[in-house]
Amino acid sequence: MADDSIEIIRGGEELLDAPHALWLALRDHHHAIAPELGAVRSDEDAWTRRRAQYAAWLAEDNGAFLLVARRGEHVLAYAFIRPVERTSTTWATERRELDIETLSVSPEARGTGIGARMIALIREEVGRGGYGGLQVTAIAQNVDALRFYEREGFAPEFIHLRDTTRTP
Image (cartoon, rainbow, N blue to C red):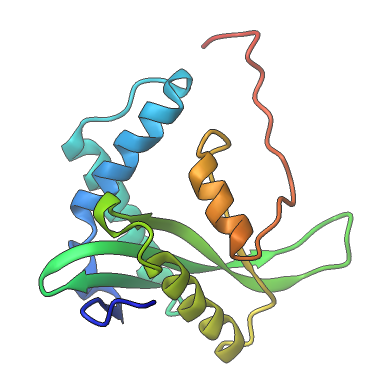
């Protein structure tokens, strides 16, 4: 059952600072579940880089947007979505899709259905914008996220493997 006290707003640059704390929490979570990927950047460096990346994507394509879920002024979740061109030299598929670049739900909001509500809103945009599909990338060790996406109808498409026999 949806929590009516949670509102999800859509926007662009005016919302760029809203996900700051959730981005850092996601970075910490990723490091905790996959420490073998190396050290993480400092809070300031990580957020400065991510915010700049979001700003650049918003500036280069008016199809990019943010969803921010909040209760009052408290940000509970956010998603950054951007169009991507999908081409292949193997398959005869060339289409513009939406990519869920980031989806982060605060621990206190998990299990409330907020992630599923955000996916539903993004899917509405896929239809409204005439996009050819929707994709998301998750860290292989993030089993909770993988389970969530599979429940939402996503399935693995390609598997990215890293050579662990050498260290940089």
